[in-house]
Structures are given as structure tokens and as C-alpha cells.
Image (tube, rainbow, N blue to C red; front, side, top):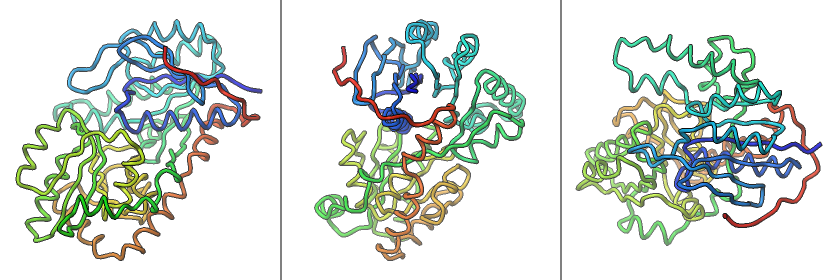
Length: 382
């Protein structure tokens, strides 16, 4: 029997990355399995957009200063939408203003699921002063979150640890996936490489939001260290965010190109496939879609060993401490590996994460099974 699944989230914009991508692929998987999908996300204005997989309901919301994101400050407006939609399942991709939707769903007898896209202890630990009661605050918040929903989903063992230590009984682990067709080694572009590295330098690429939690300054520092070691490299940073001007100033005199946010996914796929190494600097990544897209493109990655990425990349790259010396050393080692060998190892690892398996895992977490695919209405935003 076909069910209506309503996905609710903050921090989703046309220029956002992993969360928007994950929600879209899940929605496509649900629709292909015969279920109806509605997304509720913040925007500048209220509105409706029809897609090939279902529809998006936009809720007017204020912007979060310095972030580029919007956050629904009045969750009651989302509740009104849910009361009108009468969903069969509620799926929440937010643990800020929308965490109370689980309580509403429970009161209505509607199964609910929340995805923990952040590891709260690591995120809060970057902002709280030393000596703050971090464990007590985080455990209390996580316990309340788990009690407010029927199911808590984490995408890696690293992300699940803060719930597992509480003995959370309704915890489920489902990895995210990667677009294995759009991101592929065949996207290697010799002309693009010639434009980016006219002197034959090694090409290092980073695709990351330029915000504090992503630690993009590590890329600049890593390039500086590689130059100090005499390496001929060119770095390309694809992404935008509040730290961009600071990064550009810090990169003065270094061989670093800032592309800004790359809206064309095909262009991003060519860039990742053409790189020699991709650096994913984030220290608190709970999954790391950008790193997995690089692997699907046949490019090895260097990641922070303190994040969830080591369990995602396997042996298709290096997980090292966050110091620029460690990142630079890992880049140097990967540059010595034959391109064919690195490409095959990266692609083999990425093929362990198809989006179809992710959708099946999330449907199982919802207590749903695939149904015969049904056509979805296609239209334009009103």
C-alpha cells in the first residue's frame, strides 16, 4: 500500500550541499518504490514546487545571520501543514527548531523518524568554553530527541556513538549513498586539467562549504606546507560561505583558485574526476558526501581521522590528524600512487554505497516496503 512520507528540514537552500542532496535522493527512492513524498523546507517566501518525485512546500523563514541558511522559527506553521497533509510517516532532518515534530506525530499516532546529521558532542564542543558540562548537556538533548521520535537514524557508526552510549533502544544505522552514474572516472577532462594546471602541477581539489565547522583553512595551510616542501601543486576550492574572504586573504600568493559554489553538478563531477587528490578537511563530518563523490569519480581522498570519514573511505585514501603537516604528507603519498591503481581503489569503495540501498534502508526504518512505482505530478513552483 502506498504511503505519504513528509520530510521536514532546516538548512536547505539551492546552494546547500549534503543535506539537500540526501533528501532528494531519498525522495526519488521513495517515489520509485511507489510512495508519495512531500518536503517541507524554509525559504524566503511561502510556495509550492512540483518535482518528478513529488512536491516541495516552502515555508517563509528568517535567515540565520552569517550562515546563508534559513531556519523555520515558527514550527507551528509546519504543524499546520502536516495537519493538512495528514502524512503516513514523518521524517525530520533537523534537531533544532523542528525536533518537536516528533511529539506532534506521536500525539497523532503517526510513525516518526529523525536523522541525526550532526554529532552533537563534537559540534557543541567547538563552541562551549573549556570546563563546560558538555557531556551532561549533550546526553540530555540526545535522550530527549530519541524519546520524541519512534526511530533515530544515524548514517555512520561514528555518528551513532553518542546515542549508543545512552543505550538508545530505537537507534538504527543506515549509510547514505552516492550518485554512481553522475560521478564517474569517465568524467576526467583533459582540457579542464590543462586550464587549471597549465604548468603541469598536481591538482588538489576541495569541495566544501566555507564555514567554520568545515575547517576549510586547513586546505590553505596544507597547500602552504606542500609549497614549503617544494611540491608543484595547484589547489582548487569549490564552495562558498562566510569564511570566503578570510580564506582568499590567507591564500594570497599561494596557487589556490576559488571557484565559488559550483551549481552545475556535471561541472563538479568533471572537476572531481580530473583531480589527483581531493581533500576533505572537516573534523566533525558524520558521513561526508563530497568525499564519497570524489571516490565515485575515481579520485583518492585525504580526510580528518577524528571524523566519520575513515569508516566511509576505507582504504581509498588516507585518514590523518588535522594538522597541515599530516594532510600534506598524505597528499604527497597519494601523488606517488599510480593513477590507475588509485582510480580503481576509489571507485571500488564508492560502489559499496548506492543510493538504492540507502532508500531501502530508510524505508525499512520507516516500517515500509517497496510498492509498485506510481507516476508523480511534474510542474513548476508557484
